[in-house]
Image 1 (cartoon, rainbow, N blue to C red):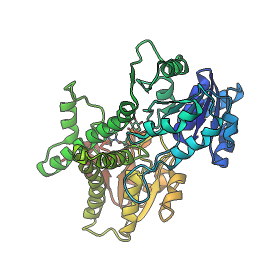
Image 2: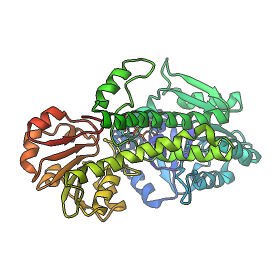
Image 3: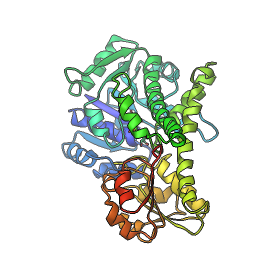
Image 4: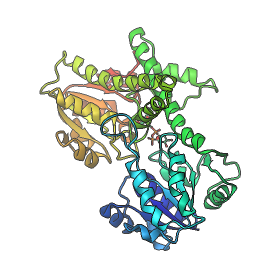
Length: 431
Ligand code: UDX
């Protein structure tokens, strides 16, 4: 099938390449010339395992093209909307400017029978509004939320763990079935529903995941005043199948381009709908999440008797999670900035996210290896659980620093091994 993907950021670039690899003829459209140039040359603008290979392969076969001119999408019969919905500059709601602009740009080229498929995360009610806008062209709208995780984006798109179609006609469902025919395994669950439910599935899934993380981080706060160990607590409650162990890793919580802004936008939308109280707990989820960052800054400061000024602190990890160069709302980068603002000399290192960090936090000092960050450090913070940090050797690391104090802000190191090697060791929610 001939497909277009409007918006070639994280979601769109991966979606376009994945659809081309499934055998479709795909054109990716974006207003950002630099991004299109990079993609057209087979270069991935983001760090995402597997994406460069996929881009190169689909590009070489001619299945994937990129353009800044939306008229190049005129021959497509299915148009995916994959633009961002950032937090508004003046509040918590989602800024729908890019979604509206994408739909407006499509209007002149839409033909009767075309299907416009929304993939962006939007406030419930958006799809119904957009359907009215495109109806005069004879095209139709479907809402098909995306659940990809950064670091696993290619796999999550080619082998989704479920598909959700918000549709108003059987025909739209059939078109989506053909689009995904090669992605749907025998057992892939499919939920065919209305627009509002499809929009809410995405919002609710992210709210649930954020809640699970903040729940265990709240338990970490209680563990800290009782001497309990939140990692053992998580293992024990996680053995209950109804709870499950995944997403119960206590630490500095969630960041990234999705969970933080999506729970805020959900709360704002619920307010607009007169149901703010139904999700009022999300403000608490957000607050718990942010408190954990402050806790790490406090632990470092306490280790210096309260004052970090002039102290050299190594921050290992800047991305919001491993296997990513994304520092949007990153707890790790936030902690590095807070320490620097309090007067510490921060040496920040991340295997992939130094460049992206430098763009948003030019005031920090960045180094190009963990060894460089550790040299002369008076405190170490493990802020993103990249494998190379999880595998740090306590004795070897002790020999590199000026003062063996470590805050394991992701609870990935073995406290007894580090203490045995002479470290003052702090975890989160651990004795
Ligand atoms: C998330 C959703 O998982 C995905 O389905 C949705 O489409 C987009 O948002 P992503 O932002 O890529 O994906 O990251 P995810 O792996 O969900 O992690 C989110 C954050 O939570 C990270 O900062 C991670 O470090 C943190 N986290 C995750 C924890 O603190 N503890 C956990 O147990 C799990």
